Length: 101
Image 1 (cartoon, one colour):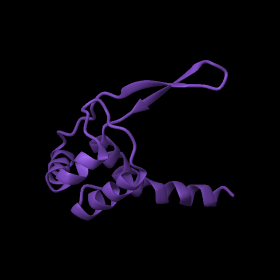
Image 2 (spheres, rainbow, N blue to C red):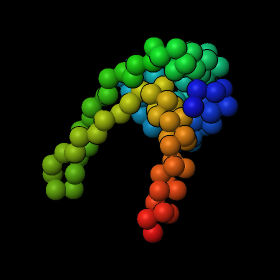
Image 3 (cartoon, one colour):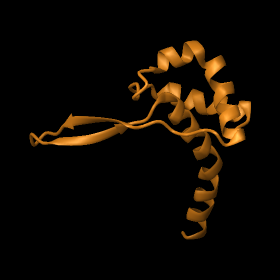
């Protein structure tokens, strides 16, 4: 999960999805420009146990009925970490699903 290859694949997945900036204000475009610095720092933090996700940015999305739906937006760096974890656990979940079919 914390290998350079895994984090690069996770970043590619997050970059394809784009999305809004989190509480830190870093967009996917800005992250892309500095990913060669961001990814090694994330790798080190994951490996030494110092990684801590940042707060979630809360926005309200208007609904058709006039109400609002809350939406939480993690930072790009946190989305990369989440995508790396997903890459590791997703095959296990798929195998479990197939076992129960």
